[in-house]
Image (cartoon, rainbow, N blue to C red):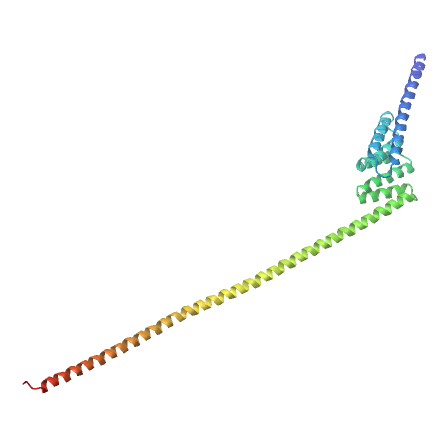
Length: 253
């Protein structure tokens, strides 16, 4: 019995020491978190990172403390580690039994999805939070904002889709115009080729006719030459006959 009593006496100081360290890390984390919130002009991710380290040290001592887990998830969110913070808030929502705590976890989980523009996930998570606490004004506002963003996003996507359709129509129209233009050019080219071929055929048909006419002219010229030669020969014969008669008339002295 004495041994058990002694053991209990020895354990209590150790638990107290761990509790002191846990509170020390939590206080340190809270101070750093508050310090990071002071500068509203910019997001002090370095200070929130130090707060994250302090909260993780506290959770090493007391892993199941939902409050420290919540603070850790907030510190991650402030560092723009939205994906990690969403996982932490989801873990808290699964483990905690109180509807109010679940609602807070879902609310912040929805915020983590919203900054990542995961609109469907954020809307679904805000609705889970409202099922826990139906009249929470902040969750209602964030849900309405997420739904508005989704509507605008869908509108923009539809506009882009319509714009792409119009561009496709313009491309098709240009293709048709180019096709018609090429078709007209081909027709003109074919007509020119046909006209040129007809002209060549006509020239080829006229060339033998021209050659034939030239041949006729040559034959006519040859006939004329032959006629001239006959006349010349007749003149020569007549001249020779007259000369012979003259010789016969003359007397020899």
